[in-house]
Image 1 (cartoon, rainbow, N blue to C red):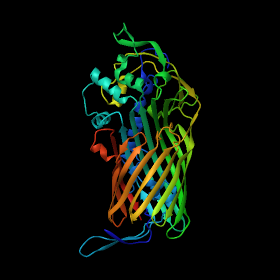
Image 2: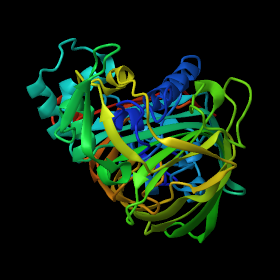
Image 3: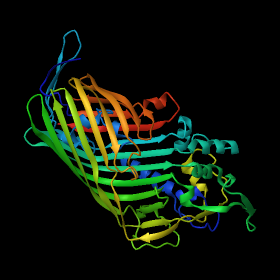
Image 4: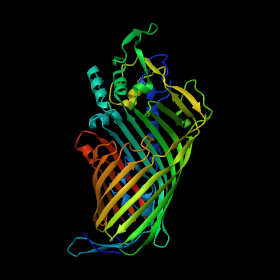
Amino acid sequence: MNVIQSTNNLTSSTTKLNDYGFVVSCLFYPAHGVQYWRLWFGAVCAAVTVLATNPMYSQSELNDYSRLGQNAIGTTLVSDYQAIGVNPANLGFIPEEIIYEEPSPLQLQISRRKRNWSVTLGELGVAVHSNAMNRSNLLDAVFSFNSEQFTLADKQKAADNFTGKGVLLNADAILLGGAYQSERYGGVAFSVRERVSAEFTFNASAAQLAFLGRYYSYFDSSYTREWDGTIIGYSRSPKLYSELFDSTRISMMWTREYNVSYGRKIFGGIKNKWYLGIGLKYIVGYANLNSYVDENGQLNAYSAVTPLFNINYGKAVSPSKIDGTGMIPVGRGFGVDIGTTILISNKWRIGISVLDLGRMYWDGNVFKAEDYLLNGMSSTGFNSYNIFTEAQKIQGEGGFKWAGLSSIESTLPTRIRLGVSRNIGVMRDIGMDIIIPATSLQPGNLSEVMFSLGAAYQIRSWLHVNGGFTFGGSMGFNMPAGVMFSIFDGFWELGLSTRDLLTYISAKDPTLSIGVATARFRF
């Protein structure tokens, strides 16, 4: 396909345990009846349930490269409502008419008129990554394919595999989005976005406790409980949670964002242009769980969760307790995105954006955990890699000692995006992105810098493919890829993407993911 004419190369496109709890009781069951895995997994399920009637779309650092049409190089390329959360300056890109010459004996020409409006009725992306499990084990963890139980040797191997490693999960969706872009007014966009993210990273002690249970060498003594015959493992030299779980990280966040962004060309001619943009967001929070040991050796663990999950914090009471049931918000906040993009010689683009500047104020069902001793436990640990199911079986009768709070504040998962790309033909670009976390300890953010190289290529007037490579961000090496179909003269666009093609080739460091858009329209 040859492009004959284009008027614009920019595309629009512990407590002392009363009885034998352990780390997973603490992390997944911080008090009797408090089930962390249910929180985040339930949140994801809830999000997917909503999506069942409104297919949605993903954008978070696990899925940033599922952007429809530009994969791995979004900072300088994404436009319309998809620029929200990536680079609002790109809303200044103005759609233009493009004329294609399709390869055929008659050399037919196809014209795609400019379309200033873009709307989506829902786009979805979900990704689960683990550097502790291979592909088959991750599939088992998510879908429970394997019913075989671990032997003691299997438990030890699993504990070794999870030492210093873990699982990352993200589910993002655009419930509704739209944009209008013009030369005169610039570009304005809005979106309603659901966002769920979670991280589980174990140190050596947490991994041993999770999979070996009372067989872990930490429990150097045991006795049999008289009234039911249960064998209890206990430590004669118990340690604090903060001593045992240093470098262990458990976090989860569920929010809904209401976004409005604006971008426009500030100055420039045909070949050189400068764009600026800003985005504002009002955020409603439904869950915020964060547990880690800081650089001073202090345990930081707090929770604010919607009544939908009916959490039981034992005898702890909170001045921020919310009566009632259902999906009631427990936090609110505001955020700002800013960005700029420069076009040089109508070929090169350089983009910089700072995303999620702001804070959240959590004032519903707020609790904070205190640092206590881990004394003993009765569980024999996980019997499979399905940590989501196995966590239910560990019903420790103790756990964190919780205290209620009136409120807590947290910063948003701020990050910086840097990008450069080169146009090699209309709708054909190559480039690179760098994503730098500014608040790495906040739920929903990367823990380290992520790099990506990629290309976006229009094969036919109706077919657009993209792909690339990413590394860093605690996710190893990945190969994202996507395909987009543009039909009815560009009126209807639909696409499919994956975060990592290598998962289908190599079993190591898998990322199970999918990005889907089926109802994206331009007019």
